[in-house]
Image: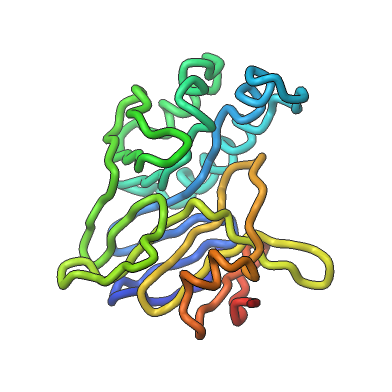
Length: 222
């Protein structure tokens, strides 16, 4: 499976071209910003009707990764649902597909700004998770100063994208102490890496790792 290998705080990780993070030593798969139920939430709140297929597509793509990698642990890094009500509105077929993915493995829901409450689907709901040298949370802390037991921060939230030759691609952002994941959900926009919010978070030598058929690293455009 296509990926870019790197080390963060001594942990050997792989940024997959599919937009997920793989930690081989822990048999751990991490995805961020699934935003399941976005089309339902959009219509419920008076927005235009969107094709209601994004949840199934997101789960199908996640299912491919789970089947290929057989992770022992899956971390969903916040904003897994577009809001709390979207959990209850999941069609039975999609709820069953999600439950099948969760079966026989540790499944961790990190709370996000769209889904701050436990989702009620099993698994563990946590605000943050410290595992080995890494800490997983939804939103990067601007003043993050790593404590001795947790020297690298893994987050999502910003849906980073890189614009090249008029087209944009979701991307991981990586520096010496921080990794920001792209959004994995099908109906998700993105924030260009030239935005001040991302420029302020990432060190000057940061990399952008573009997703796609191949995971391609390049200097983070500023």
